[in-house]
Length: 188
Image 1 (cartoon, one colour):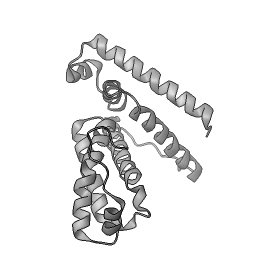
Image 2 (cartoon, rainbow, N blue to C red):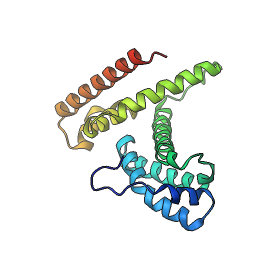
Image 3 (tube, helix red, strand yellow):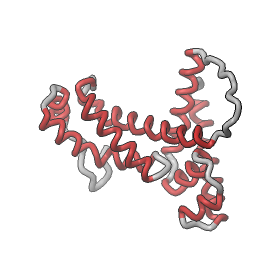
Image 4 (spheres, one colour):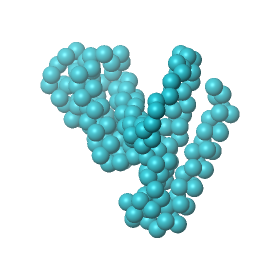
C-alpha cells in the first residue's frame, strides 16, 4: 500500500510485460519500483550507504530476474524480501569484520533444521527491528548490530549520550516485546 503522496506500484500489466522480456516495460518497471524499494531500504538498513546499496542491488536483481517472478502481484513482496536480505547481509558483514582475529575454531556443521530455524529467527528479529520508529531503529542498529560505541552513536545522530541511551532502551524493550508476542502467537 502506498503512503499518501507516494506514487503507486507499477500496474500488473506492466509487470507482466516485463516478465515477458519487453525491455521498455522493464525500464519503466525499474524506475517505478525504485522509490518504494529505496524508502523500504532506508527504513531497514543501518546506514544510508547500506540503504542505497541495498536498493541498487534490488534493482539489479529486478532487472536481471524479472522473468522468474511467478505472479505479477508478488512484485512488492519480492522486492522487499530482496532488500531485507541485503540489509541483513550487510549488517552481518559488519559483525564479521568486527570479530577478533585469532585461531579459527572448527565450526560444527549445522543441520538443515538448525539452518532453517536460524533463518526464521533472523527474519523475526529483522521484522521486529523494521517495525521500530526510525529514531529508535537507527540507534539500535548502530549500537547493537554494528557494535559502535555509545558516544559515537550519539554524536553521529546528533544526540546527547543520555538521549541515545533512552532511545536504545526503548528500542530494545520494543523488540523484546514484539518477539515475545510473536512467540506466543506462533511458536517455532
